[in-house]
Amino acid sequence: MTQHETQEDAANGITPGGTTGAFRDVLAKDHARRGKPPLHLVDMNAEQRIEAANQLGLQPFRVKQLANHYFAHYAVDAARFTDFPESMRQQASRIFLPRLINEVTRQTADEGTTVKTLWELFDGARIESVLMRYPKRTTLCISSQVGCGMGCPFCATGQLGLTRNMSAGEILEQVRVAAKAMRDGDIAGGPGRLSNVVFMGMGEPMGNYRAVISAVRQMSALPPNGFGISARNITVSTVGVVPGINKLAKEGLPLRLAVSLHAPTDALRDELVPMNKRFNTTQVLDAAHAYYLASKRRVSIEYALMRGINDQAEHARELARRLNHYGDDWVHVNPIPLNPIEGSRWTASKPQDERQFLEILHHAGITATLRDTRGSDIDGACGQLAAKNLPVAAAV
Image 1 (spheres, rainbow, N blue to C red):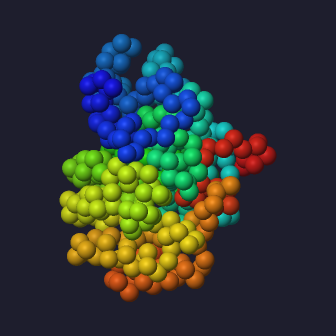
Image 2 (image 1 turned 135 degrees about the vertical axis):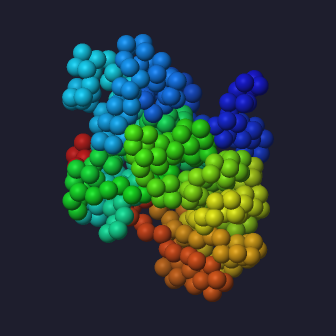
């Protein structure tokens, strides 16, 4: 690996252990064999936007017009931008608003309030996003990588391996389409607003740090610079890439950090989360607590309950001990009923073990809520996203 490549990986949040040492990224067979996605308006900095406009013979203010259409109106069809020179609409669309994602299939559950969409990207790669509408909020779970290189054995996405990182444009397009669908009343329940975004779809967000942060800043900025989704309603999840957590703490963004812990000891977590061999539970929890101190935002601890593996009373007590070690009310634990994947030996906990696990945490003074498993019947719940090519008959 060259020095340039090492610096490039570091800038993206990938650790040196990603290719050598105790942990290695699990790569898909076609990893890194694809070109880069088309450059989109949201992938350009201010200078790049002005330069592109100059090449088309457009005044700089025209770029702001395009950005306002995109972020304020969720519009990408420049042919309909009546405030834009008609002779330049087609070229402007090609240069600034190329099509990045195409819907392949859509499935619905929960009477139409949960929608899972399979998207095809420019190179034929496929990712998924899941929209979940609740009475008082609407949350979009988005992907940040094609596949995932973390290799967690109980996760469908982890079995795919990592194909490539997604661009900020590909990430934000998932958000734009969902926000437009809510505004237009295309989701059961009538017109509404996309209020929350979670990076809990395909991929390890810290492995694509630069694009993820660019996308987050544009989600949370007000139009014409972003979609105006409060940064406090955006959650970035990680299996415990410590350098990424430390970088996030310095960004000055009031994001919610979610750490997929899944085990209270190194011996068990080494088996469930291979990245633990690179950054152990102490390093991960220390970094997560430091993030809490820097951001003043409670950290979410994600914990998939697996029958007879990590869901017994001794596991709950050890988890409580580890979290209470830091001495303040800094976490919210989300025990998650495991969503089994086809052919896996990992199965969901017994209901009585789920209840006992929660009771032990509560008795120890730790806030904990059993995670909703919405979308499990359409493989849209946590750990189930695998970008399967569904038959057309399954689309809605």
